[in-house]
Image 1 (cartoon, rainbow, N blue to C red):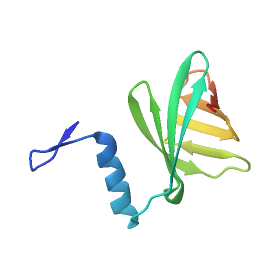
Image 2: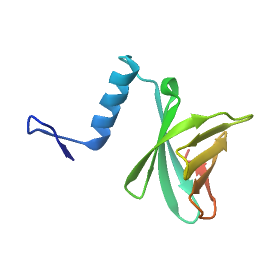
Image 3: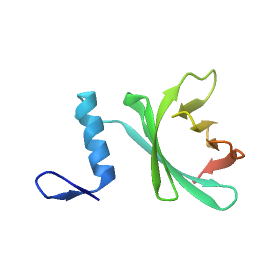
Length: 107
């Protein structure tokens, strides 16, 4: 939760989405939210902001903003140390120097 100057509380996620809408100048933001099952026994959620060329990765209660990067095939979103890349329902999660984590979209 975040406390606004007027004393009201707002969820971080709601605040972020509102800022994205304001920054884009758009009223409707095209968002595709996908839940992934990863190995070993992990779950992540990725919100793809199609019109903004951005994504948000939610993992273990942490939200990371990612920027779309050029890709010859499939997709890549990264913020430097954290990257997701994939094609179709397959996704590879790269976090720093950790071994890549393979994921598949839940049906």
